[in-house]
Length: 280
Image 1 (tube, rainbow, N blue to C red):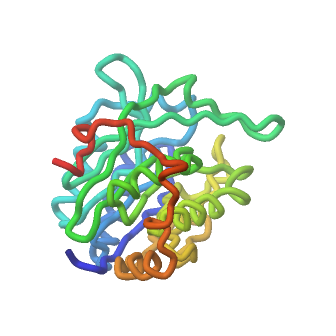
Image 2: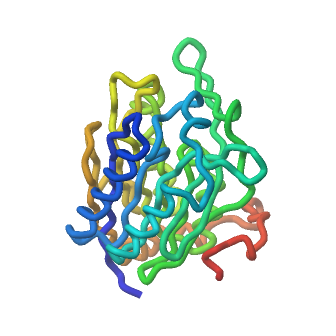
Image 3: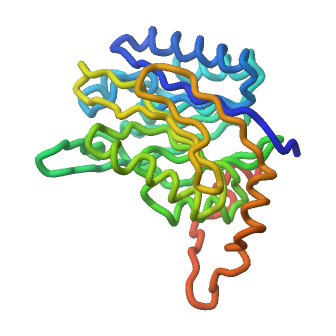
């Protein structure tokens, strides 16, 4: 496996036109690939304004216009493409917040509920249904785990991905102006330090006129817990060089993997290996 690769995070300015959002995303994916990115990630709800009031209007089946455009972009640019997420209209009539990965491709569905009294209230379960599987996939560089936004708060999920051999975790997200300033970077650094791997988060760009204002600040954190790349809040492509030798160096310096007291505690992966696209 190659020990180094370039990651590109597209901090996209999302508007009210789905077609324009898709076109802009594909254009920026092409720009990232032209700049040498081997893997590119889009933000949560890259084709739709964020908010429960938009999910039904913008939802589409998979395959559909958004994922077909991403599949084409990945192939034309010869990259791994993590398609952020889109509101999916499931065959069961439910709406899902779904992430797709090309190529190889996989789908993960997640649920996010947040209620901060007096500050902000976003209850995705009013519109979206939860998923029931985890997603990680293999590349010529390393295995990568993908989760969405609120999932970064659950240390156990990141630990399971690390147990599955992931050395990079990617979280398309949309933290807000309340939780973003205090939790966004802290959670990323925590997950990276816990598991001695790279953690990348990719957000929508901030739109002060939107009903839901995203924090932005897409970030890449290294296995030492250091921030190696960070955007501001405006639209841009953030690049980071992922050095997998650094993962092994950190794990040798502080050998958490061999020093955990599994006789006293452990995190158990309850999902079937057959659900793991990385094993196929």
